[in-house]
Image (cartoon, rainbow, N blue to C red; front, side, top):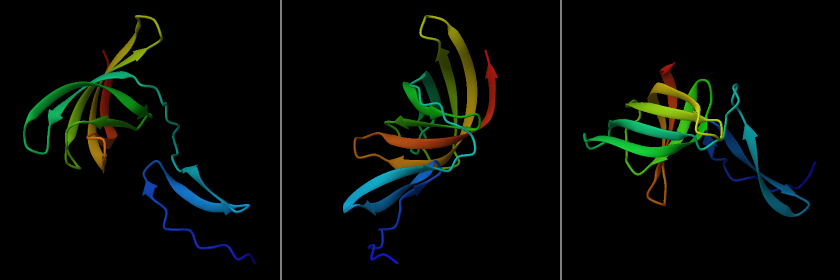
Length: 131
């Protein structure tokens, strides 16, 4: 049995958790993936539209932080509520000026308030079609 100090409670998200460990006297954080489906971490150009928490319609150009077959994550300078629906037009570029475009409807499952003025949102993909 080791005399390892108890780790602080881990911050848990839908995407994984931070595991705080003491190894050889050094603290280090390790990301533990809990998703069943892999994420693509590419900044796909995206137009997102919906209604913010104050009831105002918005349409913004942004980039996705990550995407899977069942969900996506992005950051916005707006606040939306959990359960709200947002529409996306995502451009899947192949590095040239060509690539597929998808129309996506997502529902907000998670909201993370950022210190930099941007809020992070995890959404479930409800419907999509390539256009």
